[in-house]
Amino acid sequence: MEESRNTQFAQRIRTRIWQELTDADNPWLATDARCHGYAHSEMVGQLDYAQTLFLLLRGELPDARQRELLSRFLVAFCNPGPRHGATRAAMNAAASGTRTQHLGAIGLALLGGEHLGSAEVEHAAAFLARHRDADPAALARTLIAAEAEAQNAADRRIAPGFGTLFGGIDPQAGALAALLGAAPGAWPVLAWGGRFAACLREAGCGWLAPGVAAAACIDLGFAARAAGALYQIASLPGLLAHGLEMSRQGLQAMPFVPDENYEFLDPRDGVTVRDPAI
Amino acid sequence: MNAPTIWETRRHRIVTRKGGWRIGEGVRVGAYSLLDDMVGEHTFFELLFLEVTDRLPSPELARWIEACFLCLSFPDPRIWCNQIGAFAGTMRCAPGAAVSAGTLASDSGMYGPGAARSACEFIEEVTREVRTGESIESIVARRTTRSGRLRAPGYSRPIASGDDRVGALCRFAAELGIPDGEHLGVAWRLDAHLRTHSADSLNMLGYVAAFVLDNGISTEESYRLFTLIVNGGIHACYSEAADEPAGTFLPLRVEDVEYTGVPSRPLPRGNTA
Image (cartoon, rainbow over all chains, first blue to last red; front, side, top):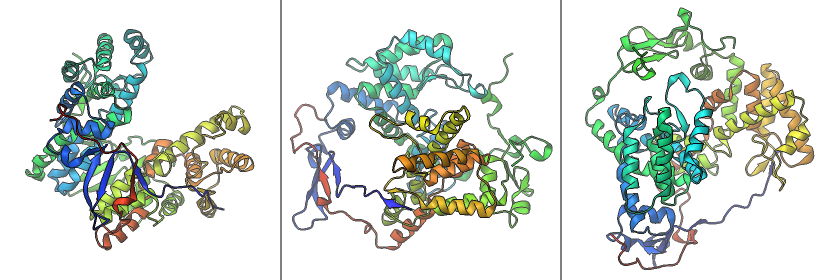
Protein backbone atom coordinates (compact mmCIF):
# COMPACT_ATOMS: atom_id res chain seq x y z
CA MET A 1 0.00 0.00 0.00
CA GLU A 2 1.40 3.36 -0.99
CA GLU A 3 1.78 6.04 1.64
CA SER A 4 2.94 9.61 1.31
CA ARG A 5 6.36 10.32 2.79
CA ASN A 6 5.12 13.85 3.48
CA THR A 7 8.20 15.18 1.78
CA GLN A 8 8.67 18.87 2.55
CA PHE A 9 9.09 20.72 -0.72
CA ALA A 10 10.13 24.35 -1.04
CA GLN A 11 7.28 26.83 -1.30
CA ARG A 12 9.25 29.03 -3.67
CA ILE A 13 12.09 28.59 -6.12
CA ARG A 14 15.32 29.94 -4.59
CA THR A 15 18.28 31.24 -6.53
CA ARG A 16 21.53 33.03 -5.71
CA ILE A 17 22.07 33.92 -9.36
CA TRP A 18 19.34 36.18 -10.60
CA GLN A 19 17.17 38.77 -8.90
CA GLU A 20 14.34 40.27 -10.86
CA LEU A 21 13.03 43.69 -9.85
CA THR A 22 9.25 43.87 -9.76
CA ASP A 23 7.36 46.41 -11.81
CA ALA A 24 5.37 48.71 -9.54
CA ASP A 25 2.14 48.21 -11.46
CA ASN A 26 2.27 44.61 -12.61
CA PRO A 27 3.68 41.91 -10.28
CA TRP A 28 4.23 39.60 -13.25
CA LEU A 29 6.67 42.00 -14.93
CA ALA A 30 10.27 42.82 -14.08
CA THR A 31 11.83 46.19 -14.81
CA ASP A 32 15.41 44.98 -14.55
CA ALA A 33 17.39 42.14 -13.03
CA ARG A 34 20.59 41.69 -11.08
CA CYS A 35 23.08 38.94 -11.73
CA HIS A 36 24.91 38.13 -8.52
CA GLY A 37 24.22 41.70 -7.46
CA TYR A 38 25.19 43.49 -10.68
CA ALA A 39 22.48 45.27 -12.63
CA HIS A 40 21.80 43.40 -15.84
CA SER A 41 21.17 46.69 -17.62
CA GLU A 42 24.69 47.81 -16.66
CA MET A 43 26.28 44.49 -17.61
CA VAL A 44 25.05 44.96 -21.18
CA GLY A 45 27.72 47.08 -22.80
CA GLN A 46 30.19 46.77 -19.94
CA LEU A 47 30.89 43.05 -19.69
CA ASP A 48 31.98 40.70 -22.45
CA TYR A 49 30.66 37.19 -22.87
CA ALA A 50 33.52 35.50 -21.00
CA GLN A 51 33.03 37.77 -18.00
CA THR A 52 29.30 37.18 -18.06
CA LEU A 53 29.67 33.41 -18.23
CA PHE A 54 32.17 33.41 -15.39
CA LEU A 55 29.88 35.59 -13.30
CA LEU A 56 26.86 33.40 -13.96
CA LEU A 57 28.64 30.18 -13.10
CA ARG A 58 31.04 31.30 -10.36
CA GLY A 59 29.18 34.21 -8.80
CA GLU A 60 32.05 36.69 -9.18
CA LEU A 61 33.68 38.49 -12.06
CA PRO A 62 36.91 36.92 -13.31
CA ASP A 63 40.21 38.68 -12.82
CA ALA A 64 42.03 39.75 -15.98
CA ARG A 65 43.93 36.45 -16.30
CA GLN A 66 40.88 34.27 -15.76
CA ARG A 67 38.99 36.36 -18.28
CA GLU A 68 41.74 35.88 -20.84
CA LEU A 69 41.90 32.09 -20.28
CA LEU A 70 38.12 31.74 -20.50
CA SER A 71 38.05 33.85 -23.68
CA ARG A 72 40.68 31.55 -25.18
CA PHE A 73 38.67 28.53 -24.00
CA LEU A 74 35.51 29.76 -25.74
CA VAL A 75 37.39 30.19 -29.00
CA ALA A 76 39.37 26.97 -28.61
CA PHE A 77 36.24 24.84 -28.28
CA CYS A 78 33.87 26.87 -30.47
CA ASN A 79 33.42 24.01 -32.90
CA PRO A 80 33.90 20.26 -32.49
CA GLY A 81 34.33 20.23 -36.28
CA PRO A 82 32.33 18.69 -39.12
CA ARG A 83 33.52 15.13 -38.39
CA HIS A 84 32.38 15.07 -34.77
CA GLY A 85 29.22 13.03 -34.20
CA ALA A 86 27.43 15.96 -32.58
CA THR A 87 28.07 18.21 -35.55
CA ARG A 88 27.09 15.49 -37.98
CA ALA A 89 23.86 15.04 -36.06
CA ALA A 90 23.05 18.74 -36.45
CA MET A 91 24.00 18.61 -40.13
CA ASN A 92 21.99 15.43 -40.75
CA ALA A 93 18.96 16.94 -39.12
CA ALA A 94 19.27 20.19 -41.04
CA ALA A 95 19.76 18.46 -44.38
CA SER A 96 16.69 16.31 -43.76
CA GLY A 97 14.47 19.28 -43.12
CA THR A 98 14.38 19.31 -39.33
CA ARG A 99 12.88 22.50 -37.95
CA THR A 100 15.71 24.90 -37.22
CA GLN A 101 14.80 25.36 -33.57
CA HIS A 102 15.73 21.74 -32.86
CA LEU A 103 19.26 21.89 -34.25
CA GLY A 104 20.89 23.18 -31.08
CA ALA A 105 19.19 20.58 -28.89
CA ILE A 106 20.08 17.78 -31.29
CA GLY A 107 23.72 18.83 -31.44
CA LEU A 108 24.03 19.30 -27.71
CA ALA A 109 22.31 15.98 -26.96
CA LEU A 110 25.07 14.24 -28.87
CA LEU A 111 27.76 16.48 -27.47
CA GLY A 112 26.82 15.02 -24.08
CA GLY A 113 28.53 11.73 -24.83
CA GLU A 114 31.24 9.94 -22.91
CA HIS A 115 33.36 9.68 -26.07
CA LEU A 116 34.73 13.14 -26.92
CA GLY A 117 31.70 14.83 -25.41
CA SER A 118 30.81 16.84 -22.35
CA ALA A 119 30.43 13.69 -20.23
CA GLU A 120 34.09 12.94 -21.00
CA VAL A 121 34.98 16.54 -20.06
CA GLU A 122 33.18 16.07 -16.75
CA HIS A 123 34.93 12.74 -16.06
CA ALA A 124 38.28 14.24 -17.10
CA ALA A 125 37.74 17.19 -14.79
CA ALA A 126 37.01 14.83 -11.89
CA PHE A 127 40.15 12.85 -12.77
CA LEU A 128 42.32 15.97 -12.90
CA ALA A 129 40.89 17.38 -9.69
CA ARG A 130 41.64 14.09 -7.94
CA HIS A 131 45.17 13.57 -9.29
CA ARG A 132 46.52 17.10 -9.82
CA ASP A 133 48.96 16.67 -6.95
CA ALA A 134 50.10 13.19 -7.95
CA ASP A 135 53.38 12.38 -9.65
CA PRO A 136 52.30 12.29 -13.33
CA ALA A 137 54.98 9.78 -14.34
CA ALA A 138 54.08 7.31 -11.61
CA LEU A 139 50.38 7.71 -12.28
CA ALA A 140 50.91 7.24 -16.03
CA ARG A 141 52.87 4.04 -15.39
CA THR A 142 50.15 2.68 -13.11
CA LEU A 143 47.31 3.50 -15.48
CA ILE A 144 49.07 2.21 -18.58
CA ALA A 145 49.78 -1.06 -16.78
CA ALA A 146 46.15 -1.34 -15.76
CA GLU A 147 44.77 -0.41 -19.19
CA ALA A 148 42.08 -2.76 -20.46
CA GLU A 149 42.42 -3.91 -24.03
CA ALA A 150 40.56 -1.49 -26.30
CA GLN A 151 37.32 -2.89 -27.68
CA ASN A 152 37.57 -3.79 -31.37
CA ALA A 153 41.01 -2.17 -31.51
CA ALA A 154 39.30 1.23 -31.34
CA ASP A 155 40.55 4.23 -29.39
CA ARG A 156 42.24 3.88 -26.02
CA ARG A 157 41.59 5.76 -22.82
CA ILE A 158 44.34 5.81 -20.24
CA ALA A 159 42.16 8.19 -18.27
CA PRO A 160 39.18 10.33 -19.22
CA GLY A 161 40.48 13.03 -21.58
CA PHE A 162 43.74 11.20 -22.28
CA GLY A 163 44.31 8.48 -24.86
CA THR A 164 44.27 8.11 -28.63
CA LEU A 165 42.22 9.69 -31.38
CA PHE A 166 41.82 7.47 -34.43
CA GLY A 167 44.70 5.42 -33.12
CA GLY A 168 47.14 8.30 -32.74
CA ILE A 169 48.07 11.22 -30.53
CA ASP A 170 45.80 14.16 -31.32
CA PRO A 171 48.09 17.00 -32.41
CA GLN A 172 45.29 19.56 -32.26
CA ALA A 173 44.49 18.80 -28.64
CA GLY A 174 48.13 19.21 -27.69
CA ALA A 175 48.32 22.48 -29.59
CA LEU A 176 45.19 23.80 -27.89
CA ALA A 177 46.60 22.85 -24.50
CA ALA A 178 49.72 24.85 -25.29
CA LEU A 179 47.70 27.86 -26.46
CA LEU A 180 45.55 27.83 -23.36
CA GLY A 181 48.51 27.24 -21.07
CA ALA A 182 50.26 30.22 -22.67
CA ALA A 183 47.57 32.58 -21.46
CA PRO A 184 49.07 35.00 -18.94
CA GLY A 185 49.04 33.49 -15.47
CA ALA A 186 49.84 30.21 -13.75
CA TRP A 187 47.65 27.32 -14.81
CA PRO A 188 48.82 24.36 -12.75
CA VAL A 189 46.26 21.82 -13.95
CA LEU A 190 46.97 22.54 -17.61
CA ALA A 191 50.67 22.23 -16.77
CA TRP A 192 50.11 18.96 -14.89
CA GLY A 193 48.04 17.63 -17.79
CA GLY A 194 50.87 18.51 -20.15
CA ARG A 195 53.36 16.55 -18.02
CA PHE A 196 50.94 13.63 -17.76
CA ALA A 197 50.35 13.65 -21.54
CA ALA A 198 54.12 13.66 -22.10
CA CYS A 199 54.42 10.59 -19.89
CA LEU A 200 51.83 8.83 -22.07
CA ARG A 201 53.60 9.62 -25.34
CA GLU A 202 55.77 6.50 -25.32
CA ALA A 203 52.59 4.42 -24.99
CA GLY A 204 51.17 6.21 -28.06
CA CYS A 205 48.68 8.31 -26.11
CA GLY A 206 48.29 11.95 -25.23
CA TRP A 207 45.89 14.82 -24.60
CA LEU A 208 42.37 14.62 -26.00
CA ALA A 209 40.25 17.73 -26.47
CA PRO A 210 37.96 16.90 -23.51
CA GLY A 211 41.00 16.60 -21.26
CA VAL A 212 42.30 19.99 -22.34
CA ALA A 213 38.89 21.59 -21.80
CA ALA A 214 38.62 19.96 -18.39
CA ALA A 215 42.07 21.13 -17.28
CA ALA A 216 41.34 24.73 -18.27
CA CYS A 217 38.04 24.62 -16.40
CA ILE A 218 39.64 23.27 -13.23
CA ASP A 219 42.29 25.98 -13.46
CA LEU A 220 39.47 28.51 -13.73
CA GLY A 221 37.99 27.13 -10.53
CA PHE A 222 34.97 25.39 -12.05
CA ALA A 223 33.59 22.14 -10.66
CA ALA A 224 33.57 19.03 -12.86
CA ARG A 225 29.89 19.39 -13.72
CA ALA A 226 30.35 23.01 -14.73
CA ALA A 227 33.31 21.97 -16.89
CA GLY A 228 31.06 19.71 -18.96
CA ALA A 229 28.48 22.46 -19.26
CA LEU A 230 31.08 25.03 -20.33
CA TYR A 231 32.28 22.67 -23.04
CA GLN A 232 28.71 22.48 -24.33
CA ILE A 233 28.31 26.25 -24.20
CA ALA A 234 31.57 26.78 -26.06
CA SER A 235 30.76 24.22 -28.77
CA LEU A 236 27.18 25.25 -29.49
CA PRO A 237 28.06 27.99 -32.01
CA GLY A 238 29.96 25.52 -34.19
CA LEU A 239 27.18 22.94 -34.03
CA LEU A 240 24.63 25.55 -35.04
CA ALA A 241 26.78 27.07 -37.75
CA HIS A 242 27.21 23.70 -39.45
CA GLY A 243 23.53 22.91 -39.04
CA LEU A 244 22.43 26.23 -40.47
CA GLU A 245 24.85 25.90 -43.35
CA MET A 246 23.51 22.45 -44.18
CA SER A 247 19.89 23.54 -43.92
CA ARG A 248 20.41 25.65 -47.02
CA GLN A 249 21.87 22.75 -49.00
CA GLY A 250 19.07 20.20 -48.89
CA LEU A 251 18.73 16.45 -48.53
CA GLN A 252 21.27 15.46 -51.16
CA ALA A 253 24.04 17.46 -49.52
CA MET A 254 24.73 14.75 -46.96
CA PRO A 255 26.16 11.45 -48.19
CA PHE A 256 23.73 8.51 -48.24
CA VAL A 257 25.63 5.23 -48.03
CA PRO A 258 24.88 3.32 -51.26
CA ASP A 259 23.54 -0.26 -51.12
CA GLU A 260 26.86 -1.71 -52.23
CA ASN A 261 28.50 -0.23 -49.14
CA TYR A 262 25.68 -1.31 -46.84
CA GLU A 263 26.57 -4.75 -45.52
CA PHE A 264 23.76 -6.54 -43.72
CA LEU A 265 24.94 -9.55 -41.74
CA ASP A 266 21.75 -11.45 -42.52
CA PRO A 267 20.82 -14.05 -39.90
CA ARG A 268 18.97 -15.92 -42.65
CA ASP A 269 22.39 -16.52 -44.19
CA GLY A 270 23.50 -18.28 -41.05
CA VAL A 271 25.04 -15.34 -39.27
CA THR A 272 24.45 -16.04 -35.61
CA VAL A 273 22.40 -13.60 -33.63
CA ARG A 274 23.04 -13.32 -29.94
CA ASP A 275 21.18 -15.74 -27.73
CA PRO A 276 18.60 -16.88 -30.28
CA ALA A 277 16.93 -19.08 -27.65
CA ILE A 278 14.63 -16.35 -26.37
CA MET B 1 51.79 -3.89 -44.59
CA ASN B 2 49.72 -3.11 -41.56
CA ALA B 3 46.14 -4.44 -41.39
CA PRO B 4 43.55 -1.75 -42.08
CA THR B 5 42.35 -0.02 -38.95
CA ILE B 6 38.78 -0.31 -37.75
CA TRP B 7 38.27 3.22 -39.07
CA GLU B 8 39.48 2.34 -42.57
CA THR B 9 37.19 -0.71 -42.76
CA ARG B 10 34.19 1.44 -41.84
CA ARG B 11 34.91 4.51 -43.92
CA HIS B 12 31.90 5.20 -46.20
CA ARG B 13 30.58 1.76 -45.21
CA ILE B 14 27.95 0.48 -42.80
CA VAL B 15 28.11 -3.06 -41.46
CA THR B 16 25.01 -4.03 -39.50
CA ARG B 17 23.26 -7.05 -38.11
CA LYS B 18 20.09 -5.04 -37.44
CA GLY B 19 18.61 -4.96 -40.94
CA GLY B 20 17.83 -2.15 -43.33
CA TRP B 21 15.90 -0.97 -46.34
CA ARG B 22 16.50 -2.05 -49.93
CA ILE B 23 14.40 0.02 -52.26
CA GLY B 24 11.97 -2.26 -54.08
CA GLU B 25 12.88 -5.27 -51.93
CA GLY B 26 11.58 -4.21 -48.54
CA VAL B 27 12.72 -3.60 -44.99
CA ARG B 28 14.39 -6.23 -42.91
CA VAL B 29 14.61 -6.32 -39.12
CA GLY B 30 17.09 -9.08 -38.41
CA ALA B 31 15.69 -12.27 -39.87
CA TYR B 32 12.25 -10.74 -40.40
CA SER B 33 10.60 -8.70 -43.10
CA LEU B 34 9.10 -5.64 -41.44
CA LEU B 35 6.05 -5.51 -43.69
CA ASP B 36 5.49 -9.24 -44.36
CA ASP B 37 6.45 -10.81 -41.02
CA MET B 38 5.84 -8.09 -38.46
CA VAL B 39 2.90 -5.90 -39.49
CA GLY B 40 -0.30 -7.55 -38.29
CA GLU B 41 1.62 -10.46 -36.77
CA HIS B 42 3.55 -8.89 -33.92
CA THR B 43 3.06 -6.00 -31.55
CA PHE B 44 5.10 -2.82 -31.39
CA PHE B 45 6.72 -3.99 -28.15
CA GLU B 46 7.79 -7.28 -29.72
CA LEU B 47 9.35 -5.26 -32.53
CA LEU B 48 10.99 -2.83 -30.09
CA PHE B 49 12.49 -5.76 -28.19
CA LEU B 50 13.75 -7.24 -31.45
CA GLU B 51 15.26 -3.94 -32.56
CA VAL B 52 17.10 -3.49 -29.26
CA THR B 53 18.23 -7.04 -28.52
CA ASP B 54 18.22 -8.83 -31.92
CA ARG B 55 15.84 -11.37 -30.35
CA LEU B 56 12.11 -11.72 -30.85
CA PRO B 57 10.56 -12.09 -27.38
CA SER B 58 7.60 -14.23 -26.46
CA PRO B 59 4.31 -12.32 -26.86
CA GLU B 60 3.87 -12.66 -23.09
CA LEU B 61 7.18 -10.99 -22.29
CA ALA B 62 6.43 -8.17 -24.73
CA ARG B 63 3.03 -7.64 -23.15
CA TRP B 64 4.64 -7.47 -19.72
CA ILE B 65 7.11 -4.84 -20.96
CA GLU B 66 4.22 -2.87 -22.40
CA ALA B 67 2.55 -3.05 -19.00
CA CYS B 68 5.67 -1.47 -17.47
CA PHE B 69 5.25 1.46 -19.86
CA LEU B 70 1.62 1.73 -18.78
CA CYS B 71 2.68 1.80 -15.13
CA LEU B 72 4.92 4.81 -15.70
CA SER B 73 2.40 6.75 -17.75
CA PHE B 74 1.07 9.04 -15.02
CA PRO B 75 -0.64 12.02 -16.70
CA ASP B 76 0.38 14.17 -13.73
CA PRO B 77 2.34 17.32 -14.55
CA ARG B 78 3.77 17.47 -11.04
CA ILE B 79 6.02 14.55 -11.97
CA TRP B 80 9.29 16.11 -13.05
CA CYS B 81 9.61 14.78 -16.59
CA ASN B 82 5.92 15.38 -17.25
CA GLN B 83 6.21 18.95 -16.02
CA ILE B 84 8.89 19.50 -18.65
CA GLY B 85 6.35 18.26 -21.19
CA ALA B 86 3.82 20.75 -19.83
CA PHE B 87 6.34 23.61 -19.96
CA ALA B 88 7.09 22.64 -23.55
CA GLY B 89 3.37 22.82 -24.30
CA THR B 90 2.91 26.19 -22.65
CA MET B 91 6.03 27.50 -24.43
CA ARG B 92 4.59 26.25 -27.72
CA CYS B 93 7.42 23.88 -28.45
CA ALA B 94 6.97 21.02 -30.91
CA PRO B 95 5.76 17.73 -29.39
CA GLY B 96 9.02 16.12 -30.38
CA ALA B 97 10.94 18.68 -28.34
CA ALA B 98 8.61 18.06 -25.39
CA VAL B 99 8.95 14.30 -25.42
CA SER B 100 12.69 14.40 -26.11
CA ALA B 101 13.29 16.86 -23.27
CA GLY B 102 11.06 14.96 -20.85
CA THR B 103 12.69 11.69 -21.83
CA LEU B 104 16.14 13.15 -21.24
CA ALA B 105 14.97 14.35 -17.84
CA SER B 106 13.86 10.84 -16.93
CA ASP B 107 17.43 9.62 -17.35
CA SER B 108 17.80 10.37 -13.67
CA GLY B 109 19.45 8.76 -10.71
CA MET B 110 16.19 9.08 -8.76
CA TYR B 111 13.50 7.69 -11.04
CA GLY B 112 12.90 6.48 -14.59
CA PRO B 113 15.28 4.58 -16.86
CA GLY B 114 18.42 5.96 -15.22
CA ALA B 115 17.34 4.65 -11.85
CA ALA B 116 16.21 1.36 -13.43
CA ARG B 117 19.75 0.80 -14.64
CA SER B 118 21.14 1.30 -11.12
CA ALA B 119 18.48 -1.05 -9.80
CA CYS B 120 19.57 -3.73 -12.29
CA GLU B 121 23.21 -3.35 -11.32
CA PHE B 122 22.25 -3.52 -7.66
CA ILE B 123 20.12 -6.66 -7.80
CA GLU B 124 22.65 -8.37 -10.06
CA GLU B 125 25.36 -7.66 -7.50
CA VAL B 126 23.23 -8.77 -4.54
CA THR B 127 22.24 -11.98 -6.35
CA ARG B 128 25.93 -12.76 -6.92
CA GLU B 129 26.58 -12.19 -3.22
CA VAL B 130 23.69 -14.45 -2.21
CA ARG B 131 25.10 -17.14 -4.50
CA THR B 132 28.35 -17.01 -2.55
CA GLY B 133 26.40 -17.68 0.63
CA GLU B 134 26.23 -14.20 2.09
CA SER B 135 23.16 -13.49 4.22
CA ILE B 136 20.64 -10.77 3.40
CA GLU B 137 21.36 -9.20 6.81
CA SER B 138 25.05 -8.91 6.01
CA ILE B 139 24.37 -7.57 2.50
CA VAL B 140 22.11 -4.86 3.93
CA ALA B 141 24.55 -4.02 6.71
CA ARG B 142 27.39 -3.49 4.24
CA ARG B 143 25.26 -1.04 2.28
CA THR B 144 24.03 0.95 5.24
CA THR B 145 25.90 4.10 6.16
CA ARG B 146 26.76 5.04 9.75
CA SER B 147 23.88 7.47 9.66
CA GLY B 148 21.57 4.55 8.85
CA ARG B 149 20.99 5.40 5.20
CA LEU B 150 20.65 2.36 2.98
CA ARG B 151 22.12 2.46 -0.52
CA ALA B 152 19.79 0.08 -2.34
CA PRO B 153 18.53 1.26 -5.75
CA GLY B 154 15.09 -0.20 -6.39
CA TYR B 155 14.11 -0.14 -2.73
CA SER B 156 12.96 3.37 -2.07
CA ARG B 157 10.98 5.90 -3.96
CA PRO B 158 10.70 9.70 -3.98
CA ILE B 159 7.63 11.16 -2.23
CA ALA B 160 5.91 7.84 -1.40
CA SER B 161 6.74 4.64 0.39
CA GLY B 162 5.33 1.41 -0.98
CA ASP B 163 4.55 0.94 -4.64
CA ASP B 164 1.17 -0.29 -5.90
CA ARG B 165 2.62 -0.87 -9.34
CA VAL B 166 4.62 -3.84 -8.08
CA GLY B 167 1.44 -5.72 -7.22
CA ALA B 168 -0.14 -4.89 -10.57
CA LEU B 169 2.90 -6.10 -12.51
CA CYS B 170 3.20 -9.21 -10.33
CA ARG B 171 -0.41 -10.16 -10.97
CA PHE B 172 0.01 -9.58 -14.68
CA ALA B 173 3.18 -11.69 -14.81
CA ALA B 174 1.28 -14.51 -13.08
CA GLU B 175 -1.60 -14.19 -15.56
CA LEU B 176 0.90 -14.39 -18.40
CA GLY B 177 2.48 -17.48 -16.85
CA ILE B 178 5.90 -15.90 -16.35
CA PRO B 179 7.41 -17.30 -13.15
CA ASP B 180 9.76 -15.56 -10.73
CA GLY B 181 13.41 -16.48 -11.19
CA GLU B 182 16.55 -16.26 -9.09
CA HIS B 183 16.84 -12.45 -9.12
CA LEU B 184 13.23 -11.95 -8.09
CA GLY B 185 13.68 -14.55 -5.36
CA VAL B 186 16.54 -12.50 -3.96
CA ALA B 187 14.59 -9.26 -4.50
CA TRP B 188 11.66 -10.57 -2.45
CA ARG B 189 13.95 -11.75 0.37
CA LEU B 190 15.51 -8.32 0.51
CA ASP B 191 12.04 -6.74 0.42
CA ALA B 192 10.88 -8.85 3.35
CA HIS B 193 13.97 -7.92 5.36
CA LEU B 194 13.61 -4.20 4.69
CA ARG B 195 9.90 -4.15 5.44
CA THR B 196 10.67 -5.63 8.85
CA HIS B 197 13.55 -3.32 9.66
CA SER B 198 12.82 -0.06 7.82
CA ALA B 199 10.32 1.96 5.82
CA ASP B 200 11.92 0.82 2.56
CA SER B 201 10.47 -1.84 0.30
CA LEU B 202 10.76 -3.08 -3.26
CA ASN B 203 9.61 -0.43 -5.72
CA MET B 204 8.59 -0.87 -9.33
CA LEU B 205 12.04 -0.23 -10.76
CA GLY B 206 13.57 -2.78 -8.38
CA TYR B 207 10.95 -5.32 -9.33
CA VAL B 208 11.40 -4.63 -13.04
CA ALA B 209 15.17 -4.92 -12.67
CA ALA B 210 14.98 -8.37 -11.10
CA PHE B 211 12.28 -9.48 -13.55
CA VAL B 212 14.19 -8.52 -16.67
CA LEU B 213 17.39 -10.15 -15.44
CA ASP B 214 15.39 -13.34 -14.77
CA ASN B 215 14.12 -13.18 -18.32
CA GLY B 216 17.48 -12.99 -20.03
CA ILE B 217 17.53 -9.23 -20.57
CA SER B 218 20.84 -7.65 -19.64
CA THR B 219 21.20 -4.42 -17.65
CA GLU B 220 22.29 -2.51 -20.75
CA GLU B 221 19.47 -3.96 -22.84
CA SER B 222 16.92 -2.97 -20.24
CA TYR B 223 18.35 0.58 -20.07
CA ARG B 224 17.75 0.81 -23.81
CA LEU B 225 14.35 -0.96 -23.81
CA PHE B 226 12.92 1.33 -21.17
CA THR B 227 14.31 4.61 -22.56
CA LEU B 228 10.85 5.93 -23.44
CA ILE B 229 9.02 4.42 -20.49
CA VAL B 230 7.66 7.73 -19.19
CA ASN B 231 6.62 9.06 -22.60
CA GLY B 232 2.86 8.53 -22.13
CA GLY B 233 2.68 10.98 -19.24
CA ILE B 234 4.83 13.52 -21.05
CA HIS B 235 2.57 13.33 -24.10
CA ALA B 236 -0.49 13.89 -21.90
CA CYS B 237 0.94 16.86 -20.02
CA TYR B 238 2.33 18.43 -23.17
CA SER B 239 -0.96 18.05 -25.00
CA GLU B 240 -3.05 19.69 -22.32
CA ALA B 241 -0.68 22.61 -21.81
CA ALA B 242 -0.33 23.11 -25.57
CA ASP B 243 -4.11 23.37 -25.84
CA GLU B 244 -4.27 26.04 -23.12
CA PRO B 245 -3.29 29.69 -23.76
CA ALA B 246 0.47 30.10 -24.17
CA GLY B 247 2.47 30.81 -21.03
CA THR B 248 -0.28 29.88 -18.58
CA PHE B 249 1.04 26.63 -17.10
CA LEU B 250 2.28 27.32 -13.54
CA PRO B 251 3.15 30.98 -14.20
CA LEU B 252 5.29 32.76 -11.61
CA ARG B 253 5.08 36.30 -10.34
CA VAL B 254 8.41 38.00 -9.81
CA GLU B 255 8.01 37.54 -6.06
CA ASP B 256 7.54 33.78 -6.50
CA VAL B 257 11.28 33.39 -6.95
CA GLU B 258 13.25 34.01 -3.80
CA TYR B 259 16.62 35.65 -4.35
CA THR B 260 19.21 34.51 -1.83
CA GLY B 261 22.38 35.93 -3.37
CA VAL B 262 24.58 38.90 -2.73
CA PRO B 263 22.92 42.32 -2.48
CA SER B 264 23.04 44.94 -5.18
CA ARG B 265 26.57 46.15 -6.00
CA PRO B 266 28.12 48.38 -8.66
CA LEU B 267 30.22 46.92 -11.44
CA PRO B 268 33.88 47.50 -10.62
CA ARG B 269 35.73 49.95 -12.81
CA GLY B 270 38.70 48.68 -14.77
CA ASN B 271 37.55 45.09 -15.07
CA THR B 272 34.94 45.60 -17.72
CA ALA B 273 34.87 45.12 -21.47
